[in-house]
Image 1 (cartoon, rainbow, N blue to C red):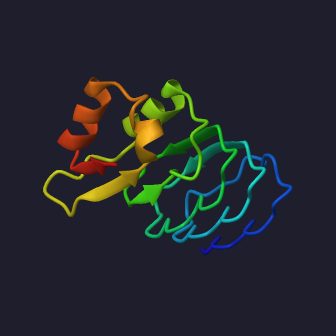
Image 2 (cartoon, one colour):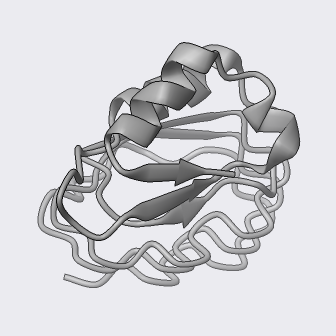
Length: 130
């Protein structure tokens, strides 16, 4: 299933309903350009193979929950995340030890909110944080 570009360009969108994403493979650009989006409830990304530019331009995003994260993604467009939200995302990064490393791009402002313990956890799971 492909949900790429599903809400792309919806600049007035502030939140979305709970979605069943458990069998979705592509969510690239799903929220790209959603400049008013603030909250995204739990997304199961266990089948996702492409999350490119998913949150590009989401400058007001402050809450995001995802499980089973196994591919690179970026939330660097927003600096409004709490430490709790950022660390919960790190807790849901799949352990990729022995596999190709992936990158969680959060930007320097968000990265500064994350504890060293969580940064070490991401590294131990073969993820780069930047």
